[in-house]
Image (tube, rainbow, N blue to C red; front, top):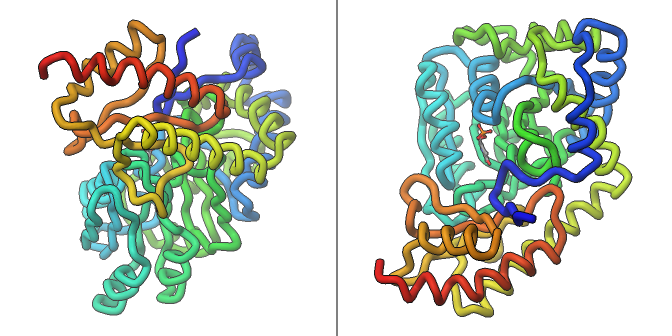
Amino acid sequence: MTELRIPGPTPCPPEVLQTLSRQMIDHRGGEFVKIMNRVTDKLKQVFMTRNDVLVLTGSGTGGLEAAVVNTLSPGDKVLAVSIGAFGDRFATIAKSFGADVVPMNVEWGKAADPDEIKKALQADAKIKAVLVTHNETSTGVTNDIAAISKVVKGFEKLMMVDSISGMSSIKCAVDEWKLDVVLSGSQKGWMVPPGLVFASVSAEAWKAHAAAKMPRYYWDFSAAKKFLEKGQTPWTPAVSIVYAMDVALDMMLKEGMDNIYARHKRCSEVARSGVKAMGQHLLADEKCASNTVTAVTAPEGLDVKELRRILREEHQVVIAGGQGKLEGKIFRIGHLGWVNEDNIKTVLAALKVALPKALAVKK
Ligand SMILES: *Cc1c(COP(=O)(O)O)cnc(C)c1O
């Protein structure tokens, strides 16, 4: 069996695969309403929130766009804290819809410094919202969202969090940390295929929404909320992925969220120590290294494509390369969702053979 260890899409357990073959039902009928209400209740447990959690059909990027267009107006000033490719994407979306983006670009491999965010907010009272990535999948770095939010909410700004590859695998306590809009994507740590994005929306975010003038239709939070009250979605949802979430969330809550966070932490420790034992270097500062994805700096002379080809063809192990400016410079091991230490040991064993072989090939 192929060992798919990229940071999404991730493998699905057999129980989830089985439910995906279920016949379609009427998305306006009572049976769907029951499933939708169950899924929403369970999602709220994972998000640790009493806020609304909207279920939108689309990929994670659609969720980032939804967060922006539902809370902001053209000309609104936002601080876009970016620690990698996905932070950049959040900023680009805001800019595309006319926000006045103040960038804060942190060196890739490092986490954002709450004190720097404090300084930026002190320097510019017009900033209305802060965009920040919880877990930066492109660099394998996790931001301290609790500490950042303490600063941001101290200034009474909107706290908008991309936790697309964090929530479900790394603790993200929406209410305790006072997070206004938080996104997560089904294909990352939720053990289901791509197709859904989840958005929690706080009372303050709803207030901002009422005044927000950016154009929106498909992603309109008001429409999603109006239909959620009847256990539906405004447009046809990815019904099969809703079935899958129902099953996957049961598995997650049965395992217990603290146990899930601990399992991801163990997997990340196995990945990091294994890579270091091969004499390789991690991109991320270890104090902020992610529990869901490990980024490894490509050693001098390594063709990352060749390494990935050998792993895929000779070991049935699939890992990710680098994104954006890190393409060809790093490779990444995903360890999120349906994963345990043995999966990561399989990846490491293959890497131990494939890496010298790839290095022997002239770049
Ligand atoms: C995967 C990911 C996205 C984008 O999600 P898509 O589903 O590919 O659109 C955004 N942010 C982060 C942190 C991600 O890991």
